[in-house]
Image (cartoon, rainbow, N blue to C red; front, side, top):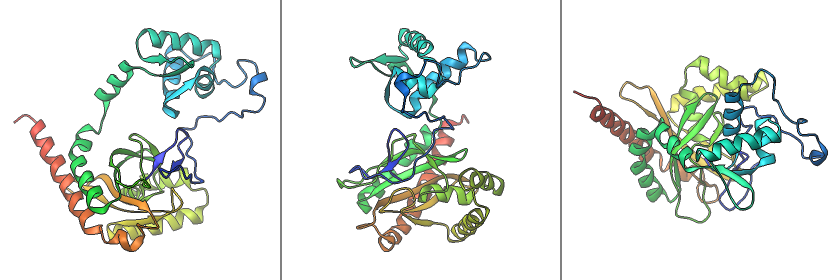
Length: 296
């Protein structure tokens, strides 16, 4: 439950980095050594079967790794030649989907932002949860987060920052491994067994470690909450509970987290009752918003 750098590395807001790094959807990393002497096609994954639409979408998805980037960065991350990347960027600029600043760096444009706002799948959930997150952050003095399951990741859909200068924060939309961190692990614990196995196989190589993870998830289901320490970020502790709908189905993970020197496991347990109350509140408010949105 942390702010995520452009490479996906969880960090405390003072810049302290953890050792864990998240791969971005299997995108191939390219070594910087000798990059300046490599031919334009050396680090690409372009094939003859790629359509123009394939290339355009790969280029747009390359912006997922950072807020802005150079032509070389985008060509590398999209697996395209620089000449192709330059041509596609010009097309995107004409349609206001990409902007270029004075330092020859590119970023997503205003029209891309508008499309993203219209496509937000968790907007109602985030809207319903925000007052509860704000209340948790105010009462605990730490940051509060709401995450949902997305394939083998957890995605942050809403948050409220601690008022302290030293705090945990997480960029909205950030992807983190579902088996690490409190609000992620509570999601994993309550997924169907086939989905849990899929996530475990993706992130955990050793079969004995996967068995240990499943034992821990069984304990979490029994307790109805989880406390984690230094899983995603060294020196951070978090506590999480599930948000369930009226039929007991999983909606999201709700957590509070902070630096362990002031938010250790004992302090975390002191906020469990409030977390559960707000999880129930989010569930109630989501259900109410759905009823209002459904024609009678």
